[in-house]
Amino acid sequence: MLVLAGCAPPPRKADAVLHYQHVANAHEIRFTNPIALSAALYRVGHLTPVDSKGFWAIFLLCNVDVAEHSVRGFHYSVNNFRVSYQGRDIGGLPPYSLRYQGQVDLNNAGDTLPILDAIAAEIQEGPPEQIFQSGFYSDLNYRFAVFVPKELEGYAGEELQLSYKGQDAILVGNGKSPSDLPAVGATAAGVTAVCLPPAP
Image 1 (cartoon, rainbow, N blue to C red):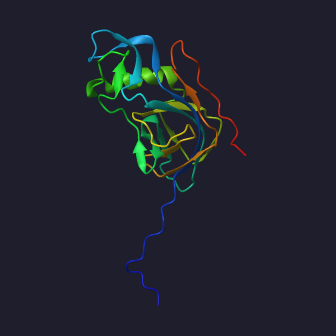
Image 2 (image 1 turned 120 degrees about the vertical axis):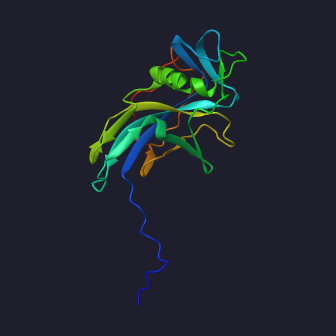
Image 3 (image 1 turned 180 degrees about the vertical axis):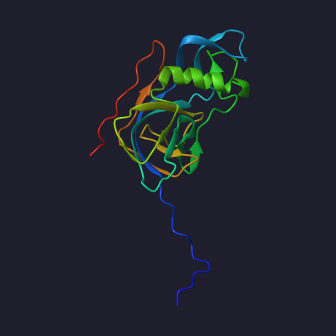
């Protein structure tokens, strides 16, 4: 006799599978047009993490495969990506984690949105948000960054695992190791803009 009481429900199916490439780790963001921020009396031309081991992990979204059972589709938002490392999800922009132009001034909560907008203007490719209905979407090459404010213990520059908050999704990297860049944006070196085929 089958007893249903106490049985675990079947696992939820993911709404989408997202394939990505971790293209770079950058240690400074430079702005083509310096920005005005409330915590500084000058226009800020570049940002660095307060922790010298912090960095921006830069990713390309290569393709999206949305399941047929996903009635509402998949809501893509660059703000919902996180780096998963040793059981922790890392992302967002914590206050007092960025230094302005190497000075003593640090970011505050009120400057979060203008900072994120300025970083997106230098790095981001593709829309900040999009609804993908069921189907397969290839060759997207949407680029975005996730801020890692502190050193990742034991990290040696390999591909980082992405996660997504707010909707069930499976995220699969292509196995390529990222470049390590002193700076990106403005006059700094460019960042990879096209996904490579998965590593064999």
